[in-house]
Structures are given as structure tokens and as C-alpha cells.
Amino acid sequence: MASETEEQSPTSPIEDSDAIVPEPEPEPGLNGIPVRWYDADRTEPYTRITPFQERHDTSVEFFYKPITLTALSCGLAALAYVATTQDVLEEGRDKRRVGVYAVVASFLVFSMIQFRDGPFIRPHPAFWRVVLGVNLLYELALVFLLFQDLQSARQMMTLLDPSLNVPLPEKSYAENCELTPLNIWNALDIFCVAHALGWFGKAMILRDYWFCWILSIAFEFAEYSLQHQLANFAECWWDHWILDVLLCNWLGTYLGIAFPTIIGIKTCQYLEVKPYVWRGLKQTRGLRSKARRVLSQFSPHDWTTFQWEGTASFVHYITVVLLLAVFLAAELNPFYLKSLLWMEPDHPIVILRLASIFLCALPAVRELYQYINNPRKAKRMGQHVWLLLATVLTELLVIVKWSKGQFEAPLPSYVKWAWSMGGILLVLYPAVRFGVPATRRYVRKHRQGFKTKAE
Image (tube, rainbow, N blue to C red):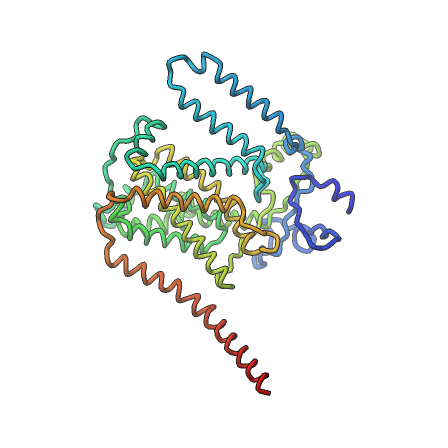
């Protein structure tokens, strides 16, 4: 055991323990018997299956060694070449764009080398450090935009894309709401596929079937509530509940589109019972096996099932409600930002924002789950979840500031009443579920104390 501990790879996950004797190596599968995903007992809870833990990275050991000075030398050489070569930077041309790209690249290289590791080690811890660096750059850009007015921000966007800063016509999807096959067929477009892929990503992030169901319905209610501000939120009833909820989110597998929620959950279930056997590239024989090992580097190292247990305690309840609220805000923010900055839904900046938030949310939610369910080992909130929370809230601040004078239509009274009732129910449930039993225990304890003193 001592020799195995000394040979532990520095990038392998090591669990801290208060005991002097190290914890025994967990047995893979169920009771030491490897479980294959296609013959696993689906009636057993997936949390009983302990994933294989990687002990040696002999296949790519070179990429796990610190090469900070080598990276610094290569980075400076690249900067020197780009900055001093005339065929790259011709005299008289605008060099601000290239300078910004160099600043971003330099910061991401620093992030890759110097940032702390996150919860994931596949495909490489450095990849998730770069993801954290991208999130930090986006947060800094949002902080800068927070101190600009809307017209200045629109003008600044032309530095990234000269075709921007042009007003866009408002588009409504509620013009012809007659339920006919032709109208439904005309409503099917590339955004249905994008919507489905988005819900696939949410299922992989949250790893909870009912969370995706709640968010799916909550987003449709949010569209109903905000269609007086954003015209593209105005949709036909069948567009809300048939195309969005039933088709794109729930029945895509059977209809041949993409059933993101179910595929995501089924993928999670497959990854939970999959036998994770990591062999080095040198120990793998055959070209096909070596190629399979290289591709497996981009798959999860192991899988953790999320058991949020939102009704187990008051802390879990508050965490789940806040998590879903932040997710809903992250869903609504890009619609407002692209409307205020006059960007088309398929603009590369909008797509880049969605992709980056997805990558940032993967380790962020994993860190939040660890922070809530294992506070003994997670002493503080992880860097990914902290930064992503700051990013979503900063986006919200930017939207609130720029929305002044842009959306003149008042909030309908029925929307106010509906959300007020929803807020009351969210407060009333924990009061009854946790407050009343706690009060009874408090009163019973004090009555027993009074009886003891009286005796």
C-alpha cells in the first residue's frame, strides 16, 4: 500500500482524511464485481456503484509534468514573431484587434498554467483551467460594459463585428396560431434543433430528470410573462407546449430530432455503470485499441450521480431553489442581451456565449454539489461555481441598467399576481415542511426543561 501511495499520480484525485491510516482503495463495480452497462440491474440505485479511480497516467505522463518555463518561452517567441513581423502587422493597418487577441491568448495561457485544478481531469485539467479563464475574461468584459451606456456598448460591438449597431425588426411567432399541420411544419426550423441540443446540455449539467422538467415548464411561463417586452417570446400555445416542451424536450428520440433531456439522463445512467478501466497507451496493444484509448481521454474519468434531495433539509431546499433560479436567469439573459445589443439569434457572439456558459456550468454544478453534500471536505465554494454565479448576476445587472427606457410596456397585473403567488408558495412550503416541525421540537424541548426544573 505504501509503494502504491508513493506512485500516485499528482493529478489523480486524492481524498483527504482525518485518519492516520489511508483509506482502502474502493472496489470497482458492485461488491468488487465489474458491472457492464448493458447487463446492470436497473432496479438498483446507481449511487451504490463505485467508479474506477485512475491511479496512473502513464499514457500521457508528459502532459502532466509542469512545463511552465517552456510554455513561457514558446509564448514569448510567438508574441515576438507576431509583433515584429511586417507580413503579419503591416504599417498603417489597424493593430488594435490583433493586440486584443494577443492579450486574450496570453491570459488564457496564464490560466492554463497557473490556475487551480477543478473537479474534472478529462480530457486534461489544463482544459478546465482554460474554461475558467474564459469565464473570467467574460466576467471582466461584463464589468466593463456595466459602466457604459447602451449606445456606447452598441458602438463598441462594431469593433468585433462592423455589421452590428443596426436596429433589428421585431419578430413575433404568434401571428397565425391555428393548430394545423402546415403551421406546425412551418414552425420547425434550425432553432428547434438548437433548443433540443440546449436541453441535452442541461440534462448533462444537472443530472436530474425532474430538474429539467421543472426548468422546461418554468421557462415557458417566463416567456408568457415577458412577451410584452420581447416580441419573440410571443408564441402560439401549441408552440409553447407541443413543439418546445413535448417535441424538443421530451419526445425528440421517438420523432428523430434530439430528445435532449432523456438522452442526457440515459447518457448519465450509462456513464454511472460504465466500467472505467484506464490503461496506459504503452500497455494497450493494437492500433484500434490505441486509437480507442486516445478517444477515451475525452470521455469522463468517472461519474458521480447527483442526489440533490431538495426536501431533505432547509439548506438543500434553498440550494435547489437558488440553483434553478440562476439557471432560469442564465436562460433568459441572452435573449435580453441580444435584443439590447441588436444581435441576431445565430450571431457567432451569441453562440459563443451559450457554448462557454455550458462548459463553465459543467464543473460549476459539480463543485456546488460537492459543497452542499460534503461540507467536511469542501471547505469553501469552488472557483467555477463562484465565478459563474458572479457572471450570471453581472449579466442581470447589465440588463437592468440598459433596459431603462427600452421596454416601456408595464408588467401586466395578472403576471404580477401569478409570480406573487408562486413566490408565496416557495416561502410557504419550507415554513410548513421545516419550520413547523422545528418549532414543535423547540417547544417540546423547553417543556421538558421546565418539568425537570419543577421536579
